Image 1 (tube, rainbow, N blue to C red):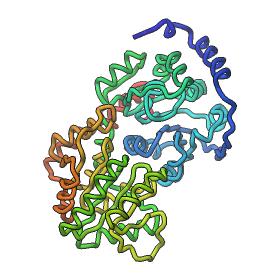
Image 2: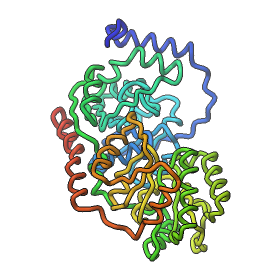
Image 3: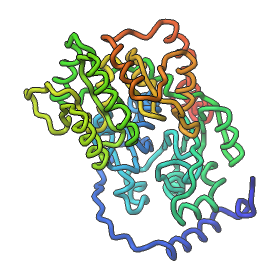
Image 4: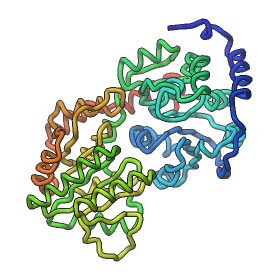
Length: 422
């Protein structure tokens, strides 16, 4: 629905916004650490808030990396090393460390910008990407693309975000030269907001099902992964576990399975290992349930790893561990396709949130009977107890999942209609 503000000239709205921000903003007292690396020719910029968005769009990003010099932007500095590990030749910049974007624009001179999944509308998602950023990149002459687009419908978190959404709701979307949306509903809403050159591509996550290439982070992980692969006993992983209630579900389930005779190995991978309170809660629960454990970040090569539970408290390693284990629990509202690519039997809880882009994937894989859905400690424990050494995904299920692929191709075709990039 349009308002009178939508009809104001953008330069006037920008003037109003700039003056208001100067009046509202508190003086910044943060210490900036970002240093610009040497620019190296044709620059293709990619914004991925987290490793989740990067993995979701990785099939297209890999095409870009094979042809252009990439500069990644994230609004969370904890992902810098992980992005760098996956794309060693790319520059990686945290927007947390950038006080003003214009010097970065002038230095790297972007010709393309790809925004991966979010935000599709101003401050719509759990990440920070300002209209100011997109506006300056566009004014520098870059072509902007929103790929695998999704809408969260989050409320603005501060006065600046509220003002930005009020003034630039339509201007934000019109900055994009092309948009590839995950479904018809998202496409329609972006079109109503002023978006152009929109295609319903589907979800790029389904294209990643054939991507089973893993990068092992270090020698310690290499040792652990080999141990799990060579063991005659199965290994169960709880991946992307995000809430305290989930720790209180899966850790007692591990104890339950052991008490019933399970003799294998366990891995627990919190979604936010950068948050100390989560690691503290995991450690407390493991101790309460008399489970021996080791933190991956504290292990040294060659040491005895005979503990019962590995706490994977590092970022960017989960995929390599999926490749070596035999069954998995996947945290609520997270990507089930990554472990399915390795043929893992999966257990999940119910009540997935339809706001999240993981929901359509959950829905489709559940319809195919690829998820075992439970809501109790005993049911997860029984799933663990029943797990064997890895059983490959059935050919029928794999074929059905493959029919949902093709989003990357549709996205590239849409971009090529206005610019022969691929």
